[in-house]
Each structure stands twice: as structure tokens, then as C-alpha cells.
Image 1: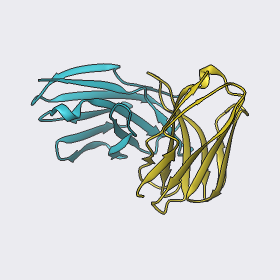
Image 2: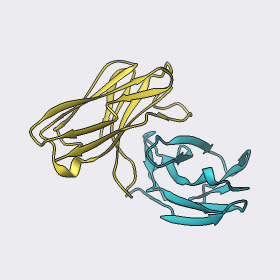
Image 3: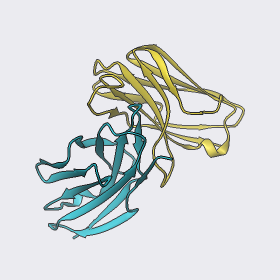
Image 4: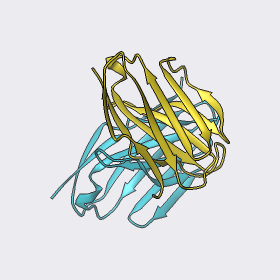
Length: 114
Length: 109
């Protein structure tokens, strides 16, 4: 595997379910990000981890819970979601949070909440 | 508040040139990025500007004017595969990327 991978690619869940999204980067980066992308809206930054430490939580509801066990893996745990949480969830990585280089994105998980 | 503005949609003809504009108002500035995103795929990096002026990379060029809070992406010799959304993003004083909603570019034969 190369680059940034995400699983699953598609997920349908009920409002009472608990599920997790997984992201893995094979680039040796130290910063990882979760974004939410809704149709015709800007990418919304949700969480940032730099050297495994969470540095940003942009007012994200507690029904979204991130976990970063090491610098290569990032999870997003989901529970009691709402239909408006349906969106594309993108994971990205970069060398580190403050470095002047680009973020590399995974293909995303298309989430539908019924 | 922080704001990035870019046109919602543009149409251009194969072989032509198109310019996609981006204006921004952010708390601090640590560089501006352009990304390309094909439908159903991940955004991919196109260009980065931190100083005023034009950066050229093959058929794509990006321009920045920090005093005007303005950038554009110039695409030359358009190909059908250039049909995609183009995202403008500014890194603010906290090194967070603030994103525009993207410009959907439609290329016609």
C-alpha cells in the first residue's frame, strides 16, 4: 500500500450504531487530519494530530471521537450519529503540522446515516 | 471571520485557457494551496504560493497577491481530464488550512 488509505470506503449506519473509520498513512508523516466534506461546502477540519498528540478539535460534537495510537494510524469512532452527519470523511497527512508542505489525502469514507 | 471565495462553477472548451480566481480573508497567512479533486476521489495537490508572483508547473500556473488577498489558478491547453473541482485553501496563523467550497470546472469538446 502506498500513500494514505481509508477503510471502509462506504458505510451505512443507523443512528444507534457504533462504527469506526480507519486511516493509515505510509508516507512517514507526523501529522494526521480528519476532515468532513459535504456537498457544495468547504472542507471542514475536524481534528488534528501532530506527533500523536491532538492539537485541534474544531468544536466537533462528542459523538465523533478520534484516536491516534501511533503516527501512522488514525481512527474516527462514531456513535449515535445524526442524518446531517452524512458526508464524505477524508483523512490526510503531512510531514508535520507546521511544515511548509502539502497534505496528502486518502480516498475518503462515504458515510450515510439513516 | 475567515472566508475563502471562489466561483461555484466554470465552463471552458478543450484546448482553451481558463483562470479560476480565489479571494481570501484570514487571520494570518502562511501560504495558499490549490488542489484538484475529481468526482468521488481524494483531493490532490497542485500548487503552493507563499510569496507574491507566479508559480508555473507545466500546464498549470498559480498566482498570488498577498496585499490584495487574491490568487488565481491558470490552466492552459485544457484537456477533458481537467474536468474536476479545484479547491483553494489558505494556511492561517495557526497553520490550519481554511478551504474554499471549490470551483467545479466543466470542459466541453
